[in-house]
Image (cartoon, rainbow, N blue to C red; front, side, top):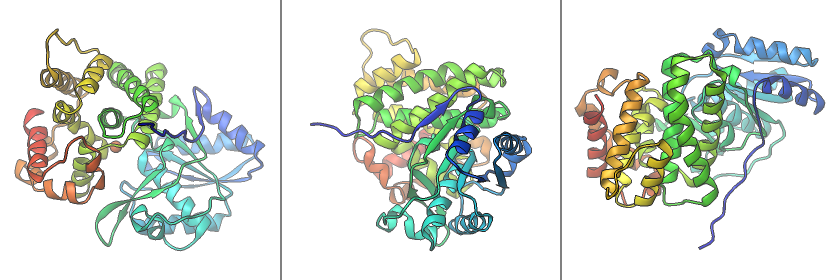
Length: 386
Ligand SMILES: [Fe+2]
């Protein structure tokens, strides 16, 4: 069977990419830039640095620094109104997934009016126009949101995560923007990117281009994450992680995530835990879960990670070796187990049914996931990494 694969928005990658972006914005004739970020990005001096770089190109800008994780739908509508009031002609989303998602979703509301709820995929994927460009600058290497069409929004009325689909017009990968990331953010976001690559590789919708991207991302992440934790200012490691997060984002936008993200979305909402942390905790168990159905992919993942697999190992044994390797990487990088996050085993298991019912992409996992299997999956996450 032939497969279709997508090409996504252009990427500007490398040191001083931010300066190059500012030149491009000026050349395109824009005058007034709106920057969306969170208080942490502002406090780290990143937003003000971008304002200065834009100024050097004669561009004026406004900064909104109140983006929050798991953006509520109401906050997106308010953000769109704030952008409208400034008369901005281009939007920059600067930060992690939440700030970039907010920029993309607010752009849709700005250009089309009404509420963000109208444009959610779950409401029939309604058409909309794009007039105001959105450029995205990740400040951590994790979500890949700069190159995916997904904006994850928290629908308050139903207390569930919903999605608005809109690509950015440009992704800007500047390693310098990630050096101020504290170790916990670096590890959680890096493990989020690893989960995107691993889940994408083992989904029911593979294609050769995105498989190659995901496997290369896996190799880059396991080789560079410990370096970035030990040497936060190492621009080569930071650049490799940014690139890995970008290409794993492209890979999962095409091939999809599945069981790990079903757990992570639910755990994030119920326990208010960091998305990357939840996704990362699920990686070893995802590999074990798919071993029977995806033996060749598990072998390729082992190879990408550099895990030595003795001759004669079957898929299950290979998956155990890979899972063990990932857990030791998590320990080395200081990733917290669920128990240390204050979650009891009983509470963790209680979200199993919702993890399937509220997340349609469980169907992208090879083999149906039953409620009992999801409960066992979560038990394994809890018990096997302490
Ligand atoms: Fe994720």
